[in-house]
Length: 338
Image 1 (cartoon, rainbow, N blue to C red):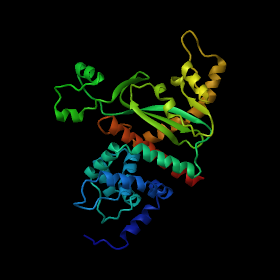
Image 2: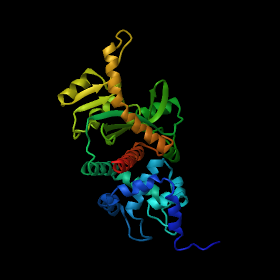
Image 3: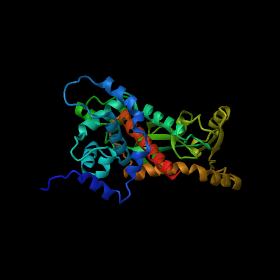
Image 4: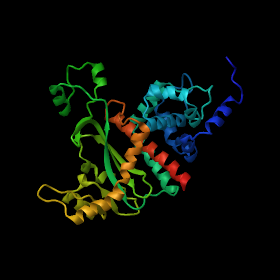
């Protein structure tokens, strides 16, 4: 076997640069040290002992979670890809001889972040960074929700009844309880059934960046989380949404809060939309469709919209990281294109 040369890493990366590496843009566009204070404080508070091998740098671990969210990889797949892909190693500032976090270390770091409720804080930290660097929310906001599937649970009718009532079937063993997601719920959309959660987001019209988000069970109606995710710092009071958010009470609350609603009209069997109402829907759709691009990018980069993890807390961590990684990727693109 040929011995590794001093410049072998550099030669490999120079060859890689002849192709387009989107991670290189993402790495160079963001001040990753921005997150160090929160991550260091979190690690110090969760550390129980100074014994053993020195822990990995928290920025390294955080960047691993960002990569994992971008490509929707399992912990085992993430460990393998770090070892296998030069682009991942360069993004993480790792050389071929460096020690690499294994799957259990990645899992534990993400698990502790979730227990510390730190994901939303990191998301808001980056949102402040966006505003300070010329990407304040402007020209109004668009609100929508996307279903995020989790692996389907095969339960009996009695087990499902108990779960809906907030109970865990007594016959389940401890091992079975760990494998069953009793927080996720079923919902129907366009005639198809889905099991999982919902990612409710608010996107600013100008930059198409996610400004607010909430994670709920899939059965929660979109309109129930409408006001919670409105971004009050947007320079415009215009709010765009599809017809699922439209009700007289909702419109009245928006008006009282000083917003201008641009919610799609919906027709009924005995009360069809007029020509003017249909034209209005088309006009609003030109702006409202921008949020579909956000969900489309998330699905395209992740390849699979299924979230791995049992329970709402873990799902919220995964979905929050997915929203944060989208914003980072979007910011890297916007800052480069000007």
